[in-house]
Length: 346
Ligand SMILES: Nc1nc2c(ncn2[C@@H]2O[C@H](COP(=O)(O)OP(=O)(O)O)[C@@H](O)[C@H]2O)c(=O)[nH]1
Ligand SMILES: [Mg+2]
Image 1 (cartoon, rainbow, N blue to C red):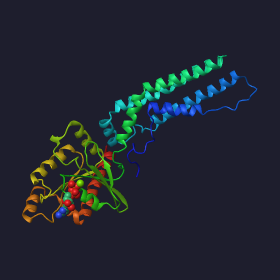
Image 2 (image 1 turned 135 degrees about the vertical axis):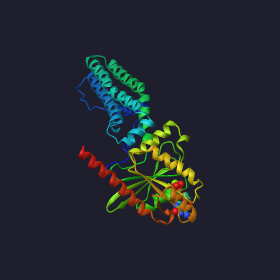
Image 3 (image 1 turned 90 degrees about the vertical axis):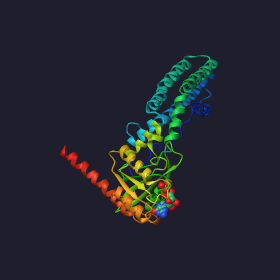
Image 4 (image 1 turned 45 degrees about the vertical axis):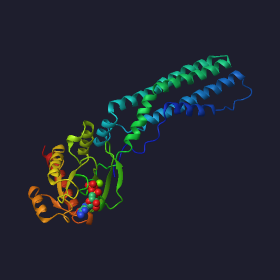
């Protein structure tokens, strides 16, 4: 797969105080095997300069790691871009990364200035004080940027939990009210053990299933708590998080339970179906009737009159599930073929 969550598995970023402690412990370990022929002053000079340099080196490498290990925000997939913006705020995040990075030249100049003073000094006590003053000033720079480091750490923590999804794999997003059979469907079609992931603003976990059809990998995503209730019950942020799915879903399967065993009337399910249609006008939407095994015939025919194109399925027995996947894939191919034609024609 070409990519998964770009924020997963980033190296650990240290907080300001942790960096100070770490760099200090490294710098005091520096010992110089200097010749006894050198004067005490000279030896102090060499050792203290080496310690300050080591302190600076460690601080800089931790700051660089914090910034450079972060995925380049302009190059990540729009799905993650949008979610990062909703969850953290990209302006804040960019500002924090920039501020942390800008500490590096500042720290360099503090170090340089103090090393020059240490070289010119002829008092070994003063050389020690100078080293200590430089470390103090660098620590102040770090403390001033502590909130930025904290934000980067927070961002990493939140974003690393987003579901790992692949961009170049045909992706089917499964929606519908709770208990209509979405998870059963995803599990039924998955060949590998589905991954369990977190999605912002829901307490439930998202299931990402994978299957191979004719040597092609397909991805099916369950959406508990996401596309399973009316949008009027959502706040702005939730709606944005839901809208981010448009970047991911090559096709949306909307699952009905015409038996109403799920606890939602067919009318309620119709309303949400229309809402999903409105919310994702550009994504092909695919209607499926699940639980047809327990749906009374008259109810099923009434439902079919209202949504004649719906496919029939019994997810719990695996009946009709492959047909749904294949039809969804055909839909995806139709769409991408059209894209190619339009591009060539324009
Ligand atoms: N009779 C019947 N029960 C089903 C079918 N599909 C799912 N169920 C049951 O419906 C309940 C809810 O299914 P679940 O997949 O958890 O729904 P979700 O909330 O949409 O993910 C479970 O008890 C399933 O066993 C089906 O096709 N027929
Ligand atoms: Mg479920």
